[in-house]
Image 1 (cartoon, rainbow, N blue to C red):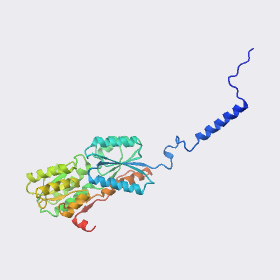
Image 2 (image 1 turned 135 degrees about the horizontal axis):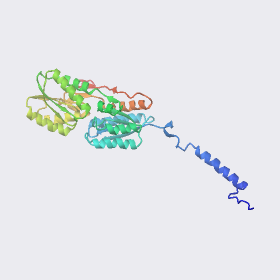
Image 3 (image 1 turned 180 degrees about the vertical axis):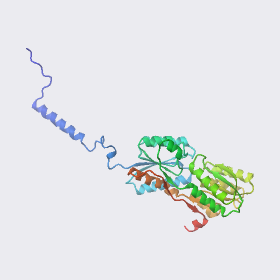
Image 4 (image 1 turned 135 degrees about the vertical axis):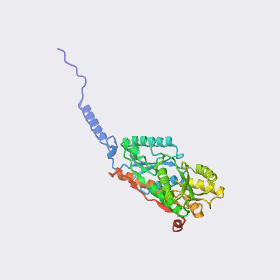
Length: 331
């Protein structure tokens, strides 16, 4: 009977080598440098926050970005920051793309000032499904569509209706009852623009003013200038124009100056950007509303970090104040 041939034969020397290799593999497998099991439990992980704004051609959003960068530099040990903006305030496709890019980049938080209150919701829903905390600032997302999408995204920002009503009431105090006024809104589908228009309308109607025209300037300075030139021609008795943001007010002011109507027609805005403050000081802009643009993104970032730490995702109201030549004189 033939004896079975052994396939492997380990001498004592090779047994010692094999045992040493097994021990070495065990040590490497437990090495701190292996992050395969670390995941989200890494205590040293800093949240990565993406700030997605509207047009960086608008001074308001430049100020917002600078405020966020300053805050992050002072809290560099708490979070990292990525700042994004779109070319103009109607570039919805680019803003949707930015949301998708930030999700792909693995951010923990998206703080967004949406260019449209409805169109951004599907992309933001995908972000939430990927575990991203989303906080809405500046322009509130549509409540009904959020509910229909079974989506909870907190809004951190001012009461735009109340702020515009405050500006409108101040303007009304400078006009005679029955004066003709025009209102210039932003992008028609932007909730903050809608609210500001409602606030202006409420103030004018309560004071007995005659609203003779309403048009949307799409937040744009050049378009506002064109609209204002037409308003002057179509309504020769016009006494005031209420603009839903300061960029449009600056465009309107340029058209009024060109037509030599700066003293005849009062003008108000909303945002309190530096260029508007200069117009107030010169008397070419009567008033604006300060929604603290330099802090608005910071409010959203701080709240998002609280949510990451276990806080409740609920709306938070931020301040809005009236700015006039009197208030500037006391600064």
